[in-house]
Image (cartoon, rainbow over all chains, first blue to last red; front, side, top):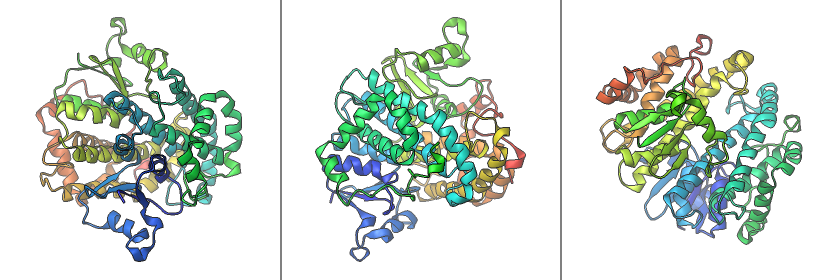
Length: 244
Length: 244
């Protein structure tokens, strides 16, 4: 295989943004921690790269991508997509377009941290139940102020895109659209009531989600066992008390 | 001028990471919001670009950089540095080195969000005093778990760098080192007690901070009125009750 993706095996998390790009492009890749330990893969393979002292450029955290040819290890979700985008044909060619796509991806990354912190506002190392009161306060602010701000921003980006195709960058679909699909899917899972109220104001984003999910390779992926279901271990979590 | 930097005029914030690169390179730039309104600059100039509908690629938030020649507007701190790095001679030439530098910069960006959230764990739109109890809990976790993890990671990156010059990437100083200088300076301001305890275990980072601050252009900048002092409006804030 050409690419090895390393990420926690039981959640979509940040790894999913990379998986969607690899899947849509039909890339030759393996999801290392979901392979058998006795074949030299699985979680031990990831922990060796994370904690071993053999790697000159160690990642701070998963996901990271190992490129077979160059023995390169690339970390940080948006950085992996910056690397993969041109190689998978998932971003326009000009430098300005690539910087713009990356800028949007970094804004999605910021948004994702805020989604995570709705259920973990105090510490990632504590359980949700240990910070539930604080989570209610933070989630309320997220839903009333931050979520509309992010949705409105990206809706406007599609509306202003001179490509006029309903995508975020240029005329065709890019990896940023795949990531936006994942945001909408995750937000619908985590905050169904808030999203039902907000979606009618954001028709471009709703249409983008629908068009991405209908792409043949994405549809096949979503129906396969390779797509890990949303759950209460991931970044997007459904706690009804936080969806006000 | 070649570059126009747009950022809030009264804090170092995220703009400082860009300023340090421009200053160290002796680049031809202006800090737009700190210039007079009657000359067409100042805060109104920034708000026009942020809220106007004339920009095809609108930034979500400051900082952003306007490049005079191409009329390009580039947002997201790490993305601005990705763009400026090669142009200012502040990153090695190979693609692998540039991705590695960017990966480290994105990890610094993640760290910075955690620093910010020590005093604003619930909402950026509320005052510190309205979330002080939650801030104490979050800051305690930051100081005992997250701060040592980030410091330890970057200390190890310098130690493993085959360039062996005491820098984070390659043989010479890069924009990532300038950003690391800013992290150490800010952490010393915000958490002097915690840093006094942790610094002896991180000699490479302490040496990096000292070497960056002694660079002629950086030393001149730090002594000038262009360097905004740390204060309680910025990302790094000193609240003694959070520095346990």
